[in-house]
Image: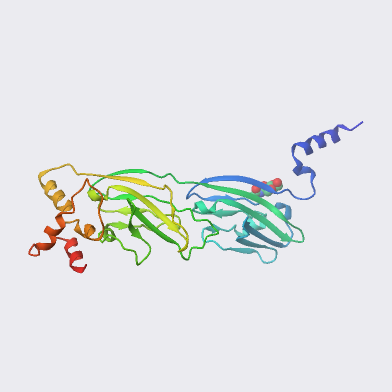
Length: 304
Ligand SMILES: *[C@@H]1O[C@H](CO)[C@@H](O)[C@H](O)[C@H]1NC(C)=O
């Protein structure tokens, strides 16, 4: 006949093995965060309080994220800029959690907090999943405005970044590139920019937009000359640039923008967009050398 106490203990053991095992359990956590948010990777080392040793935080690929030291000397260091280590006070309490700031898609994966001392063992395992940022596949702008085409690159941790190449195409034609020798439409150098962002952000800012910016944009990347190009996220964006509402002066400006200001692009590339001005303005423009310079595009032409 079992005592009520023993029955109760067995019941507790079945419900939660934690209370009935000599070795500390591995803490596990499934963690989901939005792109750009912070994430706490928890590791409770209270079972090792009073012992001396070190803690390795590493990914399932064996990459060390942080290294903490417990004992007479207490402290730590991390291999990543956006990792914040626990304070000395936290370390003393056995809180070995890491704070991952500004998570990126490539931070998704498995992290393990491993204790190395007299005893050895995995203290906690965290499956981190960073959800994809929202993206837009359709954008509309009035000419003259600024638009931002957001694109994210999914570069895995195993890929080397030293030879990362990125570029944007419009209707299949390169309009912006990180390669210095890329052959680009001249005016895109002045109106198309990539704002500073994280490693995974390759957004395209167009300012001001012109009618012939209409088209399908795609951002691309590859991590080596022999790799085939991969599209980013989203894999394509449709940009529609609308004509400004016509007033008397706006009409003059529009006319100027869509004809004499555009040959810098048409000179370099065959143009397929039929809704904007036609290429036959080029000879007229070029031959009329008596025409006074009108803004930036004339300067460009004389250099070309
Ligand atoms: C760690 O675990 C112990 C025992 O389960 C608990 O008392 C303590 O509050 C935990 N510490 C943290 C920081 O969660």
